[in-house]
Structure formats: C-alpha cells, structure tokens
Image (tube, rainbow, N blue to C red):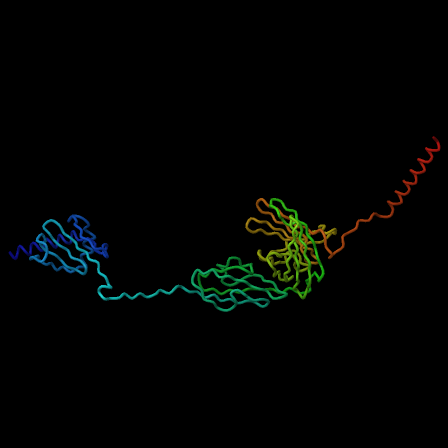
Length: 376
C-alpha cells in the first residue's frame, strides 16, 4: 500500500510539473479554474520551480473528489483523478496589517549658468546659475546699455532657438553655460536731432480695410544715443493712432512696432544692424534714390522670416528709415518717405538762357501779326 502511495505521489508530481500554470499572471484575482493536463508545459515548469512540493493527502479535509492538494502563499492546488483545480486568493496588505513604503524618485535637474560681456546684461531670467527641471524651456532676454548693441549668444547654444536674437529661449536638456555678447558703437554715429521728423506714405495690396495710409515719425528728444519717438499712423477709415517710445539709435533696442525706424548714421556695406523681432542683419549695399523730393544716398538690407520678405532702406547720413517693403503670400506693402524737415526738397529751376529764347520768339510773333493786319 505504501508503494502505491509513493507511486501515486510521483505520478501527481509529474502531472503538476506538466500542468501547473504561471500563477504569477493571475495574481490579484480570486477565481477557480479547471485546466487540461496537456497544455502550457514550459510556463508551468518555470512557475512551479518556485513553489514548495508538499503534497497533502485528502482524508476528509476537503471535497471527496480531491486525492491530494498543495498549499502555497495565497493559493491552493487540488488534484482529482482527472483534473487539477487552482484556488487563487487575493492577498490584501491592509488586511494583514502591513504597509508598503514607496520612495519618491526625484526629477532630473540641470543648471543654467548665464553671464554677459560688457555693454549690457541678461535681464531675463537674470545672470548667475539657475536650476531647472529637464526639458524646461527658459526665456532669455539680453538688454544692451546705451551706446551698445547685442551681437549673439555663445557657449552651450545647441538648444537656443535663435543665437542672434536678444530675446529667445533655451531648452534644458543638460547643464549649460551661456554668454550674451555686446559690442559698442560710438555715440557720434547718431545722425538725428530733436525736432526732426519724416513722413512715409503706404502702398498696400491684398489687405482688407482699414489699413495704414501714412506714418509720421517725430524725434521729440535725443539724449546720447536714446531718442524719444512719437509715431502717428493714419488709417484708411480716417482715424489716427499715436504712441511715444524710446529708441536706442545705435543698439537697435526698441519697441516691436518701431523696429528699424532709425539706425546709426554712416553705416556701410557689411556692417551689422539689429532689428527687434528679426535679430542682426547685414547691410547689403548702397544706392542713390529719391526720397521726399531729394536724391539721397541710402544703405539697404533684406531678410526673410516665416514666408515674409522684408527690405529696409535707410538714409546714410541720418540713419533714418526712408523706405520699407514687405511681401508675404497674398499681401504686399511699401512705405516710402514723401515729406521731411531733415533735408530740403530740390526745386527744379530752368537756366536763364531759355527765357531769352522764349522772349525773342514772343516778340517776333507780335511783329508778324501786326504787319499782317496792316497789309490786310
């Protein structure tokens, strides 16, 4: 009889190793399943290797159909003549009076070190070392001092959106160190004075009304390189809008609505100009054109952004904007200087000798008609 029990236990052990499922896949559920002994061999072997092999003979402890059973943590396996039955029970830590401790994983942090050369400072977020969570997009703004202009950002600039723009952003994907660079421009290059004004007339197509008809720029005061400018715009519906703002003539630091209205005087081909909203642009060349009734030597620069092509013309002697054109899909706009007190319009005068010819001809005609009348 003992040999039969040992043999039966051996048979049941083989059956269990062939038929036991990967119970780890069912953890957290409470159910009773019946499975065929011929399936899922590999997963059964792997899972069962972790369980104690303690078979309990059924002597009335459980249902009479059960021959043997095995008890493990949170589960019981019952063996009948034809099947194996699994009883998986949820194990609740709270019911057991235990607690689970979780450790917070800190977010990745990076340092951003910011400094500047002489002639300006970084006003946003400031200068020094700042700590940011990985992936943070940080606003940057460099402000030049009077008589200086911003040139570019240098250092770890791989994630800076625009290294040539004084106002831009940097994305924190690592520890970075950056520098805002400024260059000085002599105050003597200011070509305007208090009381100067210039008026530009717009030509616009493709833009619905109301649209600008003319723009008048009045330089109310000039102190060093800082000019206080009043800009007045007349719209096509007859209304006028006016605003006053300071402009740094040599650094290009100005409000967005006044971008490029005046630059340093006497710039030449290859010199750099900072245009708010666009960054540094390079003077492309010089030309002679007529503005506000006079031939003027002008310098010009063109650039594009977001499908918009922009071209500026500045009077070389004064640095004031005399023409700007913008072309975008479906819209073209040009503003051109028509009036100013900064130079005199040329009055075209005929030389004296044509008037003598006219006089002689007139006298001759009078004599001719008088003689014809007498002869008649």
